Length: 412
Image 1 (tube, helix red, strand yellow):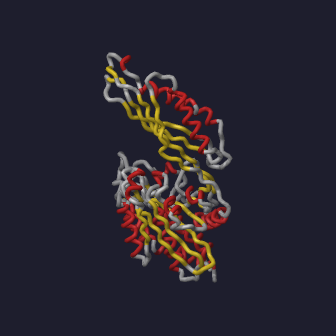
Image 2: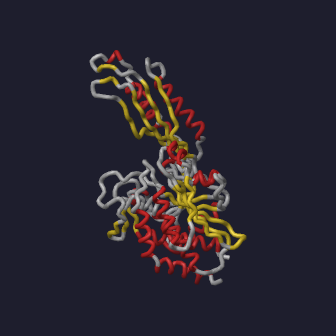
Image 3: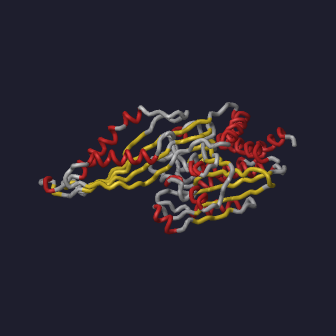
């Protein structure tokens, strides 16, 4: 086998079919998947139909409706597209998620329009991570179009609850034993490989007091006053968190914030109830169980002794960290080598303070890294903000890098 000639054919195929790839991406961008509310089964049906046009079969794995509702979403159908080749080779899974945060306001382009202008494609999930539905599908198509003997296999995992933590996406597929790949590449950006990421704890704190007339505040128990004490305790911890540093490049210190507060009934009424939602990011070295216990104690201690006040704490999410697994270095080396040839630079392999559902593969002992189409940094993409966009040349480059990496692992 002439490896160099076949790799050249791979990249040439991607160039020749790039217009088709961009058109495919436009189609998957145009079906909304706002989460919440999380009615995402229609998007999975669309993608399943699109891959059938390539002669592939998408297995539709619908999560039971009650389980989805209890989770806070409306519908989830996860997809697995299996492409088995000859025996005695590894199976690589490529995972991208189709759920998105709602678009919000301030868009210059329709958030579900897939508009192309000045070399960019605009739309919610253009960069995170519907773009990698296209990256991964067209990388596999390029590989198979070579017509060379292949061993092992590829699985495309398209899942729909990353914004809620991934437990009914990759987590559910793995728990149901529907897949156990040898390696995983999950959605990421073109100019770096993510090998580790933070853990995340999210809590809902409900402060119960007693409403009272604003002219006679002593007749009530002010839940907002108690909430203010809790807020002061939480934010008072930030200087201590800044003293903690991760040894993983790309990850700095733990963080903590309250992202939402709801409460009270009217301007002239003592607030009888306040609900806060908080987020605590943990570096890979921290123990999530110990951190949650510390945060819960901090909250309860802050409100202790306040007459008529009761505090409830409910866990919304506990996302564990992604840590490098044995065997992951092989993935990193191949991606870096191929990026060097396509992009012309050595892309770094590092951690990120974000969190993703790739961690769920790592928890099952499967080496997983994040790599896909996107810019150098999250802010450049406007991810989760108005006018989210992707430079189409970055989509082309990432598709080539992934295809070349699949060739390295699977060419017989």
